[in-house]
Amino acid sequence: GSALELKHYIAGNNAISPTRLSAYLQYSQKLMWGSSKVFLNAGARVSNWSYNKETIFSPRAQFAIKPDWEADMLFKLSGGIYYQAPFYKEIKDLDGSFNSDIKSQRSLQMILANDYEFDMYDRPFKLTTELYYKKMDQLIPFYMDNVRIKYTGQNNATGYAYGIDTR
Image 1 (spheres, rainbow, N blue to C red):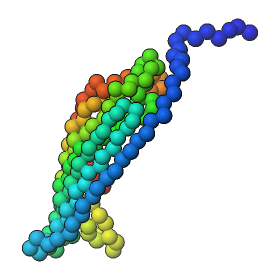
Image 2: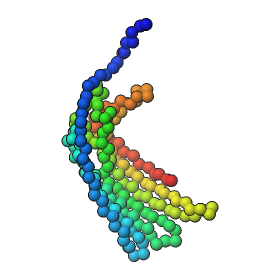
Image 3: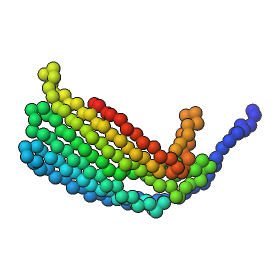
Image 4: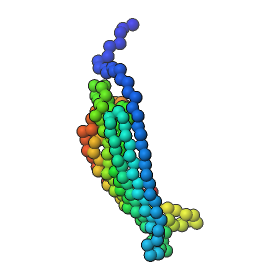
């Protein structure tokens, strides 16, 4: 048989043993505003990753009101800063070395939502509609190589998403 010759390959011998610490705090309150029910929910998450020495603070809040209407409606406004810590494949550069300066991808999110519960065909239904906007930075781009995903290992992209979800 003939020898198998590879045109391109990356070989590496990497070893890491990082530690992640995280904590969260949440406050919830139900109260009345006139004849309407109001729900307040606020919180924050703090985490630290020893690999890149990154500490992140992620506050979030939600205000919801259920008016005293004949229609069963709930309106919500929420937002916060959310982080997605990089996975193993995302910390590798295209040459296979690890990037110890990599940061978590970040998203500032705002959501305006409505829940409408009603009866139809002798059964209960719930219609949920959300308007959302997400501003993202510190993104880690990737390339598609046939069925393989290659991450750049760099926080060198930004993005945004907006739209309407209806369920």
